[in-house]
Length: 92
Image (cartoon, rainbow, N blue to C red):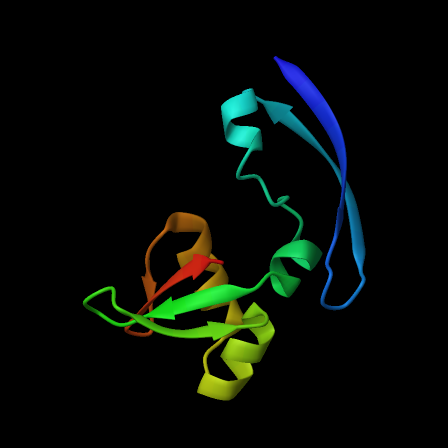
């Protein structure tokens, strides 16, 4: 198993995130980090119950505040590829 040390810079807010990833190279390609800080700042997409695109949000916090949804519910849906409060969510 190969380990990587990475630095990701969010070009919207200029925050940087440093972390470590251990796993297959094929999983690394789509890896955004597992920390709560980086996930909170990544752009997300919202879909309706038919999985049709509704809106793009700058962050999980922005979507949660605007829709009056607990961001932990959105986070759970993002991590499990599922549904929360009648919407589907994906990282952009």
